[in-house]
Length: 391
Image (cartoon, rainbow, N blue to C red):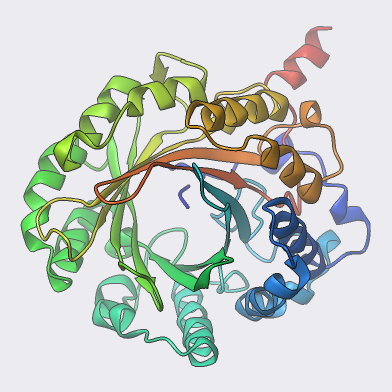
């Protein structure tokens, strides 16, 4: 879950209307069907049953936005997806294990201000916690840092659900370190890490992950695991603007014991080896657990494949390539594509938004593939408008 900015929205003029938006369908109907389809693609034996409670949770998180017709347009310029869809799906692959499904939503997507976005988000999170019987104390612990009266930034709170067949649903919350302004994001992240017992981690993070300052190494998200996680994490996301795969590999070495592996190779395969990632930035995620109070227990690199591929046909082939490279089932991607859309992959770019590699000191590698619902628009293939103009 990632987006100046890894998910900086593109101009609507660069998009065509999605097929779903002209059918009279609501946002809830679209993403509900996609959730069931993605669960089925991931091999859930009873996808309707497994997905029913998370679907109700998703609709409750979206609130009035779920009932909004797609042809009315997005409820706000949401930061989640390029076309302002306030929902994102992803599949998490681990060799030899079942595929997990994630769904992320912006509960405050109907808000007119960032402050209201935060209030709606917190209210929706508390309602979900009441239904799911988990504590929101970790969020309340840092509420003053991330929800000031005069909040800045493109969002206040996102909420994600991690769906697995063999364990209860995990809940994740993403908040905005730039809530007090971009220039104070490092100060906010440092204080938040300290409140969770990871104050000693800040020095290495500052020196290795954000050495070029907020214009080049931008602290984007602070994330918390809530509820029934075996090992809850506190996570910091950093967008690295204008870097090489080698530069990001150096950041990954914050993970101790040489466990980061070939992060640079993953970036080159996923991104088509552009040399420098000078368009949308690569994103690092450093996760901290009680296993180590000073060093990250996990490192993730997110590659915005949609900005380094001509169309989704290319992006889909790269997703399959990185999955095969790590001994994972690439055929799930084709089934998930069919669950998400009826369009041909070569007709647009951006439904497959990110590819990420997750390395950990205590778990096997994982590859995540992120999907946009394309509720409101489809970006044409890169360069397609130029081809039409000059052809």
